[in-house]
Length: 238
View 1 (cartoon, rainbow, N blue to C red):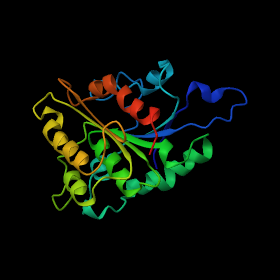
View 2 (view 1 turned 120 degrees about the vertical axis):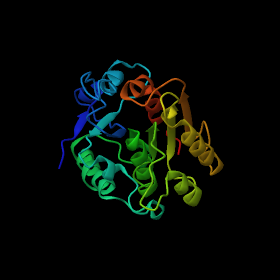
View 3 (view 1 turned 180 degrees about the horizontal axis):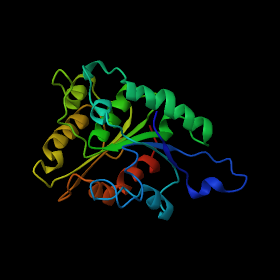
View 4 (view 1 turned 180 degrees about the vertical axis):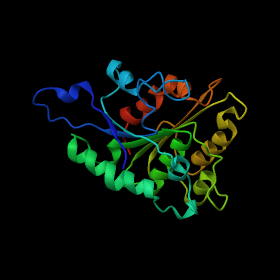
């Protein structure tokens, strides 16, 4: 069991409103709010203040699912990622968290209005969630995903795309270029090329953004978080 954080947009509280909202499920969910003390001194993503202040993005419900001490195991690729079987964390998200959110709040429950989003390992588990539950989660956003992380057999998400092809979900991916590992830019570019080869189409169901000079931390993700939110909320054609 763990605490779940839920952001409700301002319009949610309009008296008599029956309006239903798209939902974005956020991994590392304690790190995505306006807490300047968290996240190794980089502060949170400030997604709540971003949506509070925007006049251009559609409103949405945000659900933050905090990580645990078992983060690497929960978000990782497991024993054999090529089998695309849901992990306990995947099942927790789909069988426990989503039904409770749909029960307690005015959500749009269909896959086109249900997204997952995360950074680094949270980006990896967002993509695998799209692959194992495509009928539930129709939009995926992965910021600085840790594509170098393998399963127990040494396979990565690049091998998943090679074997299984285009997932049945819309996909946003980004990366920075700073630091010793260049924020994983080389592997991200390789993944992006594979994704395009397998059928994801820019401007239709795919977007890649390279944030030149950005590092692998929450400050960098906070500065560009509007991009995946725009991708998720403004176009749901598939």
